[in-house]
Amino acid sequence: MTTYLTSDWQTMMDLGIQNSSYDDHPIHLLFLETETKEGRKMMKNWIAQPLSDLKAIEERQSAIAWDQLPALPLNEEELDFLEYYLSYRDQLSAPNALVSLCKTVDRLLKYDSSRYIVTRGVDLSFKLLKKLNELQAELPDTCPTLIEELKKQIREIFLFKEMEEILKLDESALSDFKIDRYDYLFRMEHYPSMRQLLTSIYTLDVCRSARRIALEEGLCITPQMHPSSGWCMKDFRHPLMPNAQANNWHLPPGNIAILTGSNMAGKSTALKALATNVWLAHCGLPTATTFMECPVYDGIYTSINLPDSLRDGRSHFMAEVLRIKEILEQAKSGKRCLIILDEMFRGTNAQDAYEASCAVNQILLEHPHCHFLISTHILEYAKQFEHHPAFKFYYMESHIENDRFICTYRLKEGISESKVGFWIIRKELIE
Image (cartoon, rainbow, N blue to C red; front, top):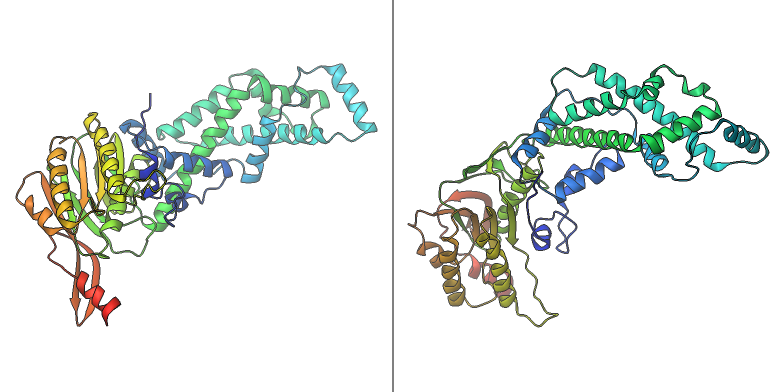
């Protein structure tokens, strides 16, 4: 059984997985240029439900990476009509020659709008099956698993004699009785098989679209996923920021990374970029990197854009405490999680934030099976753990030069010594 990565509403809002209230573009916009409407729905579903099953992830990756993906057998309008036709439940009865004849005579006297749906639906079903038969004959013997599933479904539906007959028939010359007969086959007897075929076509659409976008945008099609704990990225950036500064990332055997840097240096964006690429990798989709190696996580949880809970009277600080408590429950469950904590305890004074952050770190050390990424501008907090083997330190480069704030958005190893807060206040409020 396929297993899925766990997360929650707050994380999906933080990362822009869905439409958020933070004016971020949802990440699925990157991949929504599919050839069909149902393909777009499937792509959204893939992104909303990432996998924690290595085999299933690799099956998607291998299909997207395959350079022989065939074209779709029908266009979007034709597939949309087929969807409507198969879901159209009127006039579904076993075919009868006398009834078909009576209905034919009746239609000579008055117009029957539903007949167009049935006639065109049968015509498109014929076209689909003939195209699929040609497609599976042209595919090589060895294909990615998701394409092999389509080949298998095509072979299985043609095991039925009446379906095999379709390959020899001229659908434009069918009598009303034969139209009724095949209509009943498509919408009743072989309805599950027709649905399976359409689902596989939409899967093909998703794979073709993801591959095309990856090539256009310079994305990594096959990030390397594995059960061990190593994690590195080369030239990573946020997927929706194609011209952003690319950075490298490596988390060695330790499990906690602390990211320092001044305000506006890009710490939150870097955290979102890291987490979003990990999320996409678990969807089996390309990532905004040139190389990526990542463990398979059971869950991803973030605390980035945490709102005040004004409705129930909580302060921002209390909302932070409760969110961190909620996230740590996931780590305590034994699941391997990626956890992002952006500027812990910003809702209280610096001394409280320092002491509270140090206390949280002691709890994090009890869960070496998880990875924790923490941003802070409290340098004393970072330096408290500077020599601990479980910690890795990065900072976002920034400095003042000729009375100008220079921010390169480069991620470097170490702890930042940059202090620009007073300079910003002086420039914006005093001068």
